[in-house]
Image (cartoon, rainbow, N blue to C red; front, side, top):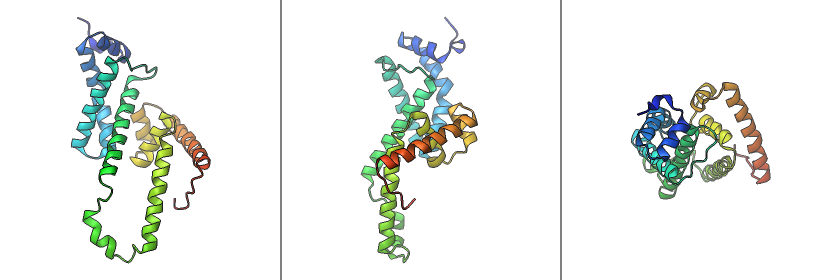
Length: 197
C-alpha cells in the first residue's frame, strides 16, 4: 500500500477516480481547514459553515465521479470555487425567502425621523445599486472576483487574502487593480449610475 502523504493533489484525485477511498480522505484532511475557514469567514455562522462545507465535498465527490474535474490549476482552488458558489446560492435563496427580515428594528425604522420617505427611497436605490454591482462582480474572472469578495465583502486585509489564495501580496493587489478596472468597464457597458456609492 502506498503512502498518500507523498502524493500530490492531482495524483490523489486520479487515485480516487480509480476507486481509492483513502485518496479522498487524504485530500479532505489536507484542505479541510482552509476550505472551512474560507466558508466560515463569509457566512459568519459555524453551523451554516459546516453544512456548506459538507455540501462542498459532496459536490466535489460527485464531480470527480462523473468526470467533471478538468481543472488545470490547483485542486484546492477548484474546491474553494465550489464552496464559493454554494455560499452565493445560499444567500440568494435566503434573500428570496426573507425579503423583509427587519423584525428587531421594525418599530424604530418606521418611527425614526431619519428614515423619512426620501431616506427610504435613497436606501432602496442604494440597495438596487449594490445588487447590480454584485451581479457585475460575478462576471469578473474567478481570481479577480475572489479578491473583491474577500476584500470588500469579508473585510480581509491583502496579507490575509494572499495567504488564503496562496499568492504574493503584490499578486493580490494586482488582481484587485484589474478587478476594479474591469468592474468600471462593466459598469459603463451596463450604463449603471452609481450616484449613491
